[in-house]
Length: 351
Image (tube, rainbow, N blue to C red; front, side):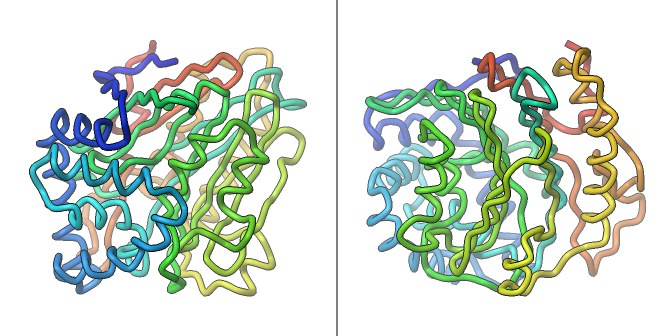
């Protein structure tokens, strides 16, 4: 289910064993993640690492109710990486700690019937450039669950990828002041990856009560030609169906009801990237599509350096955190294939 430039870390066993192997194999990268976020929390949110860990611990009860296996996997990960459980928990709750002040820049899209005969899911993940050294490609086999394959930051147990049932997910961050001690969004992404249908995905993020601790966008698609935009939050979850086989999202809310309930801080380039991506996708000839065509779209430089393929400004504004494309991913969910590029897609080598 993969075709990437990086070594694939294959993990099997109990939740604790899966975590331990993740932590021990990627120990150096886990420590890089911890260094990145300790610095980021202090400089951009005013949190010491101790305070960040204390906030992360507020999520434990919700995680235990949601899926205790995630706590066991994070415990094993901490042991494998020779750090504390609270350190790993803080990494997995880093969006809930950081995304009040740190803007993201991700651009994601899905294509399916009637736009194409193949279901595609793709995105650029834009974040701190230092985290390029923390990237890991995980493949996880668990008893009674689909096989998972995803790209993540070492130490974080859920992110962007797909599974053996043909379910895929992408992530767009939203900068807001909304938070409740519910399930961190990266654990919600893990739950999506463990699902067998879009209907099951929606249940895991919404049914009963709005289960995600902070606002974010999950773009989900499936091999059976379904796709949906899920704007999640602890107070409301909006489900936006695909239009003519296409779903696009950047870093602003699209649901009117969400806009009325959530106070967000959106950068103008989110709207520019959204418009550019929609124009590019509308002009596609579906008979010619392959992964290289989609990486070319993700390489677009309109409004450079704040473009779909996002680059570090030549003169960064120290008062405004900058983001750049850290990895780019394309998934063919029909054929259960995943390709990704570390760094910017414009610098990739054609496969």
